[in-house]
Image 1 (cartoon, rainbow, N blue to C red):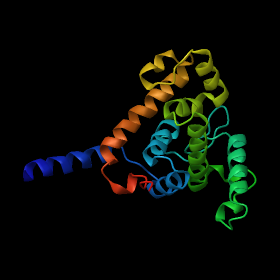
Image 2: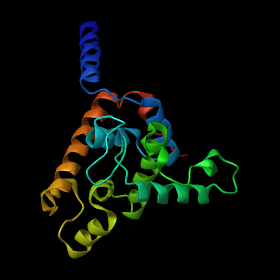
Image 3: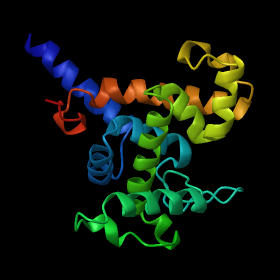
Image 4: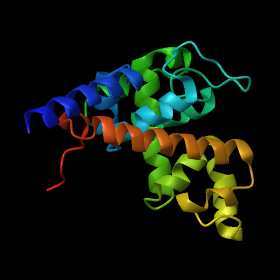
Length: 193
């Protein structure tokens, strides 16, 4: 029994070294605030930027979660409007995307964007992840036209290779992170009562 426990601990330690999660506190706080699984956010970050804050894509996407400045401004405005009467710190979100490279800001805005996509796709996390890459209009069109059914096991139906690959990699990392970090209470969303 003791040997099995030691092997499990050392194996888990090995996998945490192989698949580390940087910015853990920021991811956990922002994901909880947005009511999104923090391990999903970590998986998106790993695929988008490999946790490099300075990444800027050829299309102009910025930071850890590779957010387009226009999308970030839209999410920030939505958050400001939601919290305008609450006296909360979100009222002070900048009106522009200059802070977009900041890990805290990028993860907060990105987590809320993921949450808005999950809501838009009625809880279909797979479709939301596809929309994070390809855009919600495009994914909605695929679903509406029957090109793709929105299921992970059928991602080969996604007509854009980059999006198909993105969804595959995000869920590969998400499964790994759940196996490695899923037993740690810090990575779980609070139970809704």
